[in-house]
Amino acid sequence: MTRAAATGRILLVDDDPGLRRLLSLRLESDGHEVVTAESAREALSRLTGFAADLVITDLRMAGMDGMALLGEIGRERPGLPVIVLTAHGTIPEAVTATQQGALDFLTKPVDRAALSERIQHALGAGRTNHDQGDDWATQVITRSAEMHSLLGEARMVAESDAAVLINGASGTGKELLARAIHGASPRADKPFVAINCGAMPEALLESELFGHEKGAFTDAKTAKPGLIRDAHGGSLLLDEIGDMPPSLQVKLLRALQEGEVRPVGGSQSVAVDIRVISATHRNLREAIAAGDFREDLYYRLNVVTLTLPPLAQRREDIPLLVDHFLKQLTEDKGRPPKVYAPDAMELLTAADWPGNIRQLRNMVEHNVALTRARVIGADQVRQALVRDGGTVPGEVMPPLKQARESFTRHYLIRLLQITGGNVSRSARLARRNRTEFYKLLSRHGIDPAAFK
Image (tube, rainbow, N blue to C red):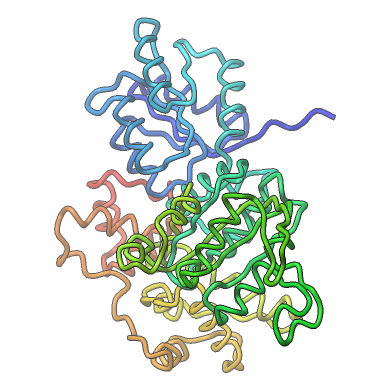
């Protein structure tokens, strides 16, 4: 059976309005979602609120050119595929662009069949969890461009056996991301085993990790293989690796270097084949400087680093997460559905959330349990925030008149991200009328449609 062509979200950048319109129509007729930009700077603005799968950009443009745009994308959205369009006279520059990170280049006039073929190849190279036919990270709920960029990197590293270190504050979803990486890897049909390295005493942790022989210590009435051997062929998540005792760090390093483990009380080593994923909320560089973590183990575990942003940096995801938790806690359990009142949702969106997603879920569960009505109001949210020892936010965003000009654009973008491009709600949150708000968006070159 012929496989259906993949469709994706494409950012098209060209300063020629006629070509931009023609290519946009072609791409849309092929089923792609297309956002256009007439300059590199506008393209960077679009990427802030558009989780693109692919960028197609002209090489020669006034102001910032395609090469400079390629460099910015490489810094801001590593892993995002870029196809460069070029005239015949600039082919050498296009070749240079591919050497500097562009996935491919096409010469003008652009052949439709060739373009379609290159797009299919590009989408295969840079898909993320929202893509059709690719459900590897469906448990990661997000519309954040930063998170989609991170997921793009995670999807690529999943295909290798490289050790991954996931950084992030408590409650940001480190184990969820680790499970997604395992599920997208060639080891997906093998075990995924997780252990919290900071949750048990040293002697017990050693036995849990490396196993023990019968009689190795007082309570060892039977032999136990250990979690490293349990993960053979699959992936081992060492959660809170920064809290592992130094003596066990030495033994773990040796096991990873030699590809074998020796159980407590044993005389023979056993070969193991595992992919190691580590996670920590600690700054391991600082732990190394303090003598609490081995530098050689750090480099063994830290081949690729993925850093999960705190929930306060991805506020646009809060309404999605809240809806997801509400469904889990009500409809999925056969209970009547509940919703948050608009002002209650605004409070949730504006709160600090030091406990991140875990704290947000706890809050939703608390509100559901203590609210008989279908609608959860702002008072219930305020009471729960005070119960958690947090502060009740005043405004979702500071008034625009207090913001510097350099901050205004970011302010508007964050509002549109939070509301999903809803101009009326954004204007209400900013305490501006719709007409004035539209003028602000126009002045800063922001298209609310890009955030829907």
